[in-house]
Length: 292
Image (cartoon, rainbow, N blue to C red; front, side):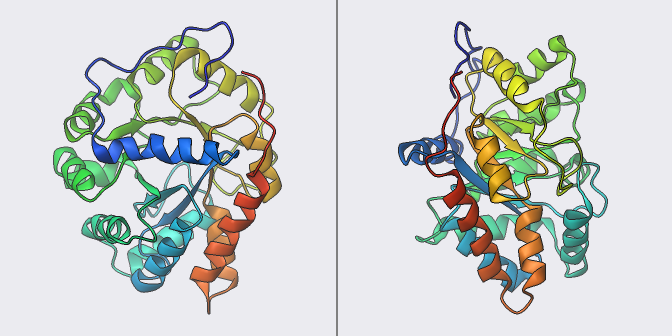
C-alpha cells in the first residue's frame, strides 16, 4: 500500500475491477492503519478441531483480527509445517468438504459481530482444480470471500486461475520469495490483486525460526513493483515476532501460533484462539513504521 521512496508503483491490471467482497480487504487494512497499527490476519483450517468448535473459534477470531484466512485442509501441503498439517488432517478426518468452506464464509459474513473482518482463503491448487476454478471462485465471491492465495501455483501456469478470479471479482494473492529472479518477481506482482504475501521467516509454517533478515529488503523491493499492500506470514510464532514484522508489512499473519494455543486448551479451543489473536493485536498496536 505504501510505495518505496523514489519509486513508481505498478498500477493494478487494467481489467481488475474488485467486487464489494474484494474491496473489503483494503477497507480492513485501512481501518487497522487508522488505529495506528498494522493489520492482523489469523489462519485456521476450516473444520478444525471440528466444525462446531472451529466455527466458534472463527467467530471469536473475527472480533479481534482484521482479516480471517480460511484454510482449505490439505494433508501434505508443501509450505505447511507439522502443526498445520496435523490440523488439516484432523479437519479432513472430521469430514471436511469444500462446501464447508463456503458455509463458514457465509456464516461469518452474516454475523454482525464477525462481518467486519475481511475473509480470505488459502488453498493449494489441487483441491481448487478438482472442484473447478470457475465454480470455486463464483461460490467464494457469493459467500463474501475477498481473495484467495494459492501458494503452489506457478505464475507460468496461473492464467486460467487468474481469469476465473477476475471474472468473480476475487483478489488473486501470490506468495513470493526473496530468491525469485527479478524479472519473474515483477511478473508475479504485476498479475497480483488484493495484496502480495511475503515469507516472514526462512522455512515452512510454524518453523519457530527468527524473522528473516531478507524480509525488509524484500518488502522494500515489492513496494517498488506494486501499489498493493504487503502481508508477512509463515513462521510468525510470537507477539514479539509479529511486532518485528509489522515494522515493514501492512498485515501480519499468524496460523500455527493460534492452532498451538487451541491444541494446548482442548476444553476451550475457541477462547484459546481468541487469546492468541489478542496478544498479537496488543503487540502490534502503535508499532513504529519504517520509512519506505
